[in-house]
Each structure stands twice: as C-alpha cells, then as structure tokens.
Image (cartoon, rainbow, N blue to C red; front, side, top):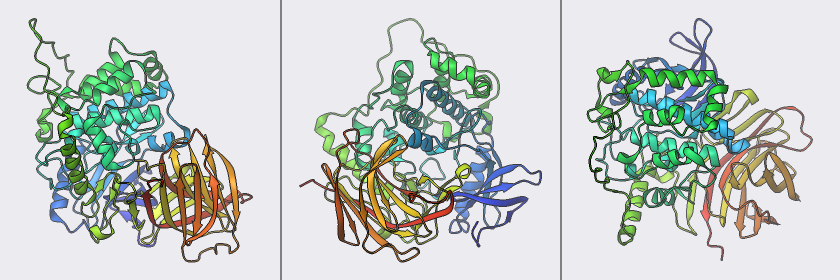
Length: 578
C-alpha cells in the first residue's frame, strides 16, 4: 500500500494493492463479513467526467446481469462516489498469460478446460447483452475449479462499441482483435469479435504464440486482415473449431453458445474434453448451466447476433434454448461473400488502412488500451510508439505508468510490478525471478534495446529478456558488480558470459543506461554508451520473440529480500542487420 491509497471505500476495508490498469487501480478488500473482493477504483482524472460516470453506471448495471458461469462476478459499484469504484469477485489464481510464459503451452486436458471455460464465460456474457471487447490471456484467470474471465463490458475512458462511444479510437489488444475492428469507425462491434478473440486466446494457450504473430502491431494487424492463422501445433476437432472462430468474415464464425455446444456435446468431442470435464466438476456444472439457462433469441436464429449491443434487459433468455433447426431441404444457400479476402491488387490499400487504424489505436487519449499500450495524459509526444519499419524506433515507453508495460502482482510469490510515477518497479520478497507484463508482439531478431536501470536493494539484479518466446530466450542480468548474459530455457538459466564491472552500479543511485544490440549471432552489451563486451548467440532453439523486463536475484542472495529494481525510458529499434 502507498500513502495516498484509500484505507476504505464504502463498506469495504482496503487491505492490499493488486495492480493498476487503464481504468485505475485494483485493490484487495474485505467485506464486513470478512469475504475478500477486488475493488477497481477509477483514475482521478476520469472521476470529474460526467459522461464517463454515466457510461460507467450504465455498463456496470449491464455487467451485473452476467451470470457467474466462469466469470468473475460483479458484486457492487458506486458510480457516484468521489472516486467511482467497482467491486468484483476476487479470483485467487494466475493469468493464462503468466502460466504459458512460465511453463509453456498447456497440455491437452488443460487446453480443453480453458477452451470450455472461456466459451462458457462468453455464453454468459453475450447472453446478458454484453460484449467483452478486450478478451486476451491476461483477462483469463486459472482459478481452482474452473477458468474465470475478468474485465468484461465495463466502461473505459473511450469505447468503440456503442452509442456511448467515441469512434475515433479503438480499444483492445491487436493480436486478439477481429478484422472488422480495423475497418470503418461506423462498423458496429458484435459478439463475433469476442469469438475471434476466443480463437486467438485458445491458440495461444495451446502453442505459446498468437495465430497472427508478427514483428509489430501493424504487421500483426496486416496478417489478421490478409493471412490465414498459423495453427501449427494444434490438432483434431479443437484446431478446426479455432480455425472456424478465426474466420475473417464475422458472419461465418460460430456464436459463443455454438462453441460451447460443440466443445461439450458435439459429435466429434475429443477425449481430452471428456477428461477435462471429468476432472473438473465445477467446470462441467458451469458449462451445463450456461447451456441450460443462458442464451439470446434473435430473429433468424441464435447465430445472428449483430444487434446484440443494443438489446434491453428483456432480451435475456432464462429458459432452455432448443437447438436451432437446420435449413429446409433444397438447393444449398449461396456461400456468404468473403469480404476480408481481398485481391493482391489492393494489398497496398489494405496496409494503408492498417497503418491509419494503428495511428488511431496508438494515438488514443489518456488511459486508452490499444495494442497492449496506453497513451499518457500529457499527449502524443510522450506516448508509446510502435512501427513496423526496420532501422526505426519500434517501442518507446517512459515507464512512468501502465502503457506498453502493465502493473501486475502474484500474491502467492509476493512479487509485483508497479509504477511510482517515475519508473516501473519490479519487486520480489524472496529469492527468484519475476517478469513484468510487456508488449505481446515480438520484435525482429536484429534489434537494439535501451533502458534505464536502477538497483534499489542489495543483491537485486535487473533482468532484460530478449528473443524471448514463452519458454525460452536470452537473459541479460544487470547486477551491482557483474553483468551476465545467458539463456533462459524451461525455467533454467545458463550463463554464457560474465562481464565484471570496473565501476560497480551503486545501489539506489541515478539510472544507468543499459543497451543490447543483437544482430545475427552476436549481441553487444553497453553501459552508458560504453561497450561492456560481446556474446555469441548460437542457441538454435532461440530464434525470436519479445523483449521483457523484470527482477532477478544475484547468485548467493539470501532467501528473503526484499529485492527491487526500477526501469525507465525503454526503447527498442529494429535493425537491418547491415
């Protein structure tokens, strides 16, 4: 807890800080009855905005109608409080992103559990007339009993989804955004966009990568618009269902309810699904209840959900829904027009549209989530920037607040990443490693990264991971007296080269600038512009990935810390390799 953090909100006693996001700060709180809950407090700069409060009030009312089938239940809210807040069920479990990053892709039964759980949650969410809008691995918590989906349907500062929306910006994480979200601002957002995100989330859980992964958000968007998904590593009926969910045309995707039906009771249900349901009775019960009582009746059948965002409360069906009858006998209907498969002749136009859309995404006002980034309140001049071109700046984040990098915590390990207004602080109470949540998209193999580093406590080392896929990559450890560069594979760290520092890094001193230049099979390390040394990068299993930041403890460190490092002004350039 920090000095300015509230100690109580309404009837809720604040007992800890869980993290920060685009809308505000999330606290762990206790009800008068002693039940732990999560309280999300709106940012101070949004509180005076009457339009935001109106939207917040409206969307909280809608979100409270979502049945708690694999969702974190919305319990309470006070839109009229001096600091508006929302109270949701506290889910004690890691995010799907954290599990995949730390342990690699899920096994078959666990993967099917996630697929069923997220489909169950979307069935409940859509059945209440709500669209999630930002479904991604960090919004799926792997709680005991069943997965839980969080952060659905609650107003951000600006939304691109309804009559309450400023359509000049988009909200979401590019790797999981449906193709229609890169089109005209007048294109309505429908539940089909969440189904597309489901396909991306489940593919990531099963392979450790997004199905349209590229070197930058604009390149990822271009692949979403023009290329088929990369589903290598997946097999069987689940692969087919993911491919169906990732159709370019939203009209060709199944509904969330159809996804759930096919997963749990379809004729080609795989053995892994049966195993997942058998081993998780809570998940089985949630899926069965969602099938039985949650759905939306729409003129023309359950899959025609284009008008869902405008539904009123009486659109919720709380009785079993019969299967939608098939088409009458006769000639098959004409195949829907594939709006998203465009000829090569207009490829340049597509990329121009993507570039324009990404300018909107990345130039959004304060607090907006886009491509895993958030623009600061002082305007575009200091906003994180991402481009796809080589030899240019790809990532630029001051790390003064949650933007490309996010606040997060892992209470079980007493570890966190937070922002103090000047830097991002990575913390552990005990010996070990903890990575902060950074951009989802990778960077080219040839790149240069530069970041300010402060060591705040003894035996703390700043960790900089590069060419990092979920379970392997290179790791640079910046410690007080030495800099180590090595590999980090399957949770094992092996040092390739140690560079003793002639001038040790003073604990608590001003930031020192650390730079890594990786071109081909060699990396060069610099400190404050002076070369420290070079290291061969010859591990054939490490071919590319993300840049991440975090804390690592020095060899011989005591079991108990605290261990803290701070990062500021991170920049990443793509290099041509010349």
